[in-house]
Amino acid sequence: MSSIDQPSAILSPEAQKTVLDLFAPIMDELTKEAQAEVDRFNAIFSADHNAIGRVLKVHLVIEQYLNEHIITKYKIENLAELRLSFSQKTKLLKDDLSPAAWVKSAIQNVNSVRNKFSHTLTPKIEWGEINNVAEVLKIARNGVSYAEPIDAIEAFAPVACAFLIDAPSSRRTQLEQLLKSGKMKFAVGEIF
Image (cartoon, rainbow, N blue to C red; front, side, top):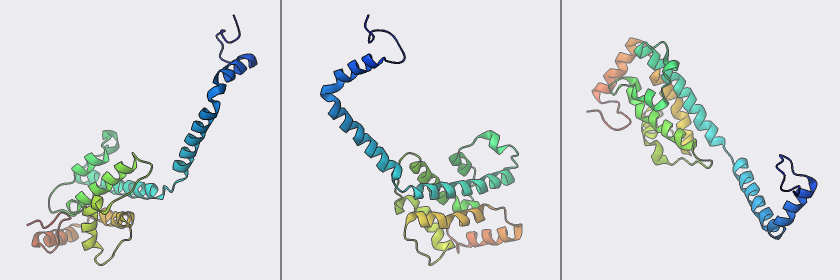
């Protein structure tokens, strides 16, 4: 039995030479293919992934406030144990005249963008993907324009967090009155 036929975890030097001799006719082609994959990996790995970090940071901050809102609103002491997804948590926001409802669809936009970013190495945000974020900002940050959708998402984060805070009842009542009067619109259009 030759050394190449022997079962072994490590090939002997003679067996290694035999294997290399077998691949000699196609070694140049294999080397070129391997180098092409190394180059592709390096291009992906060295690309600017700043936007991914920015979106993830906004998502995490909003989720922290969303958790606090749910715990306060529903008196849930063990929210972490429920292991709810971000999407499930947003569905717990009521569709009423509450401040949280006003930013709900925009928060869902942020979640969609974050989900998209988690499945691609070359993410790009289109303005149409954050239309509800843009609508909230037209009111909350009136007159401010944003160069890129990611800038709008970052500007939306403190607005979302502020609207998720359980405000004192006097302020909440004032906001609800503005919503009911039609002077303030939902991100998806007028409520009446």
